[in-house]
Image (cartoon, rainbow, N blue to C red; front, side):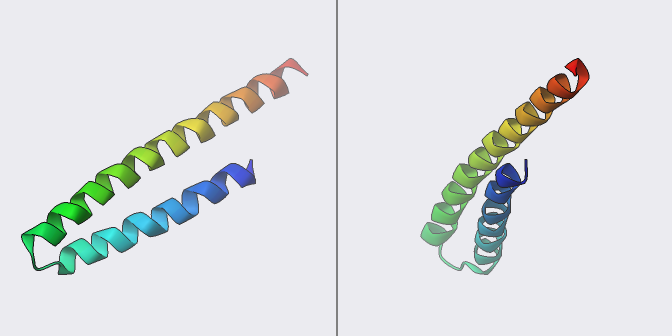
Length: 66
């Protein structure tokens, strides 16, 4: 289970970094690029969390059957 959580940490770090850069961005083009990157990373994070939830569910079912 921990191996799946390892995917979540770097994604969160990337999201935090982009948010910080967005807060400091001065040009509209940079802001737009960073917003696009944030949307992409948020999508990845959502899929990562869905996968973690699916693994948790599967482990719960396996644990309950034994």
